[in-house]
Length: 194
Image 1 (tube, one colour):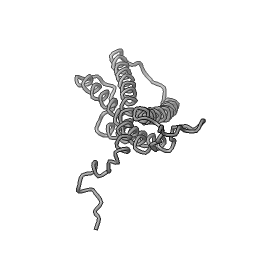
Image 2: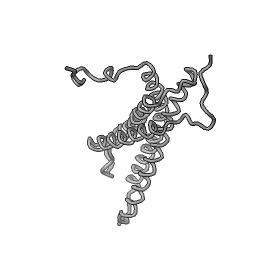
Image 3: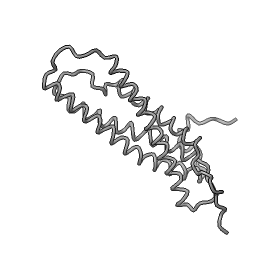
Image 4: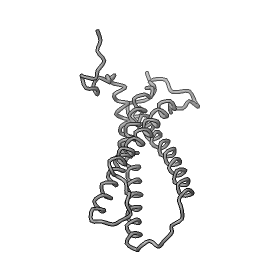
């Protein structure tokens, strides 16, 4: 016999799992960005030097990694927390898990993007007007840095969507298999039972 279908009008999206995954995505993104800034992955001097192109390359890779890792973690959380409705074939269940990952990625992207836009607007309003001319060399360097940062952020977001999809599917598979969290926790950090 075929499993029962969901009642008309019932959504398969579980917003609790989605919000949980989006919060994990946002928090991990903030922490990784702060860590990267703390170790010097931010352009802080507008003075050209020989190592600038290498530094911009590393910054770009870091931004891609931040987008991918944070969205993947949030997608996994959503896939793992989503209830397994008994009314779909395995392919349909995999699709629903993946969609939860994509919705986590989309929600986190919109919220983080809105926050970044607000922060940029506040920073621009508080910044003093430039007092002198900027050399053509510094302008070119700043334009290159902006282009690399924008490209890396976009690439990280696109890869983050894919990471969220596949991580949510993995989380759903682990949920269905009943995989214990102990599989991921090193033995020395596991709770000991007496």
